Figure 1 (cartoon, rainbow, N blue to C red):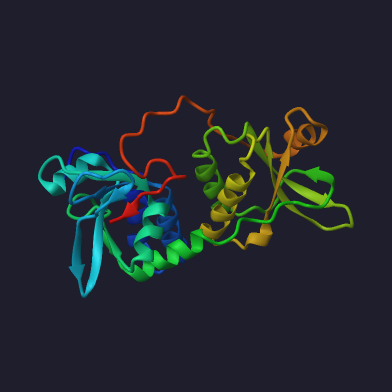
Figure 2 (cartoon, rainbow, N blue to C red):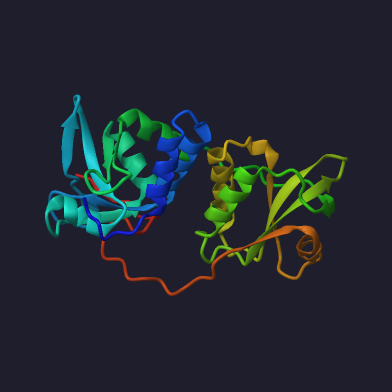
Length: 265
């Protein structure tokens, strides 16, 4: 086992799931973390363009690809440098599920070593492929401080939005009363980047799904920076600051660009 790699978020999520095997929330949190983690997929040969050939092993008649959440863990398993592709867990789950394959995660390399069967990856891919949350389409009459929001949802939102680099300035969670008398909670993104609305809405939907909260418990909205609605929300809402965009890193491995997922050979 590689000893030099510090404990990773995936290690912690897996440990929490193992410690509470009957806790559905802990299992959801593990799969949520897996979906958002950049994984190093072990290959049989160097990638050819966008085409990759995973190294697979058969377990009970099913093929299992091998992936690790750290390059050092992959090298430790392989016995030295080996070809790999870097891609998000969500992308890898969809690719493997489409081919009926499973995933060997961090095998013999970390406390989070686990075999995920094809059925588990199929469920994850289907869950991630569901539509985004509901956008607030009715005019908001008044806003107030949020009340009774489950801590599991606050934690999931905080983690999810911390990875939404450059997609918006910040977000505010508040109670809302709509025209017609309906009330609920809204997460309003302020200063969203052009075209970022679908990604932000999907991020909130996933936070709801993997925290075990019904999608109808939270609406999603968008407001202009400095606008009247934004100012009202900033006065009473719970604020989430999103990371600012940084210069794009040069990507050497296929799968790093989510708009161009690699293809299995």
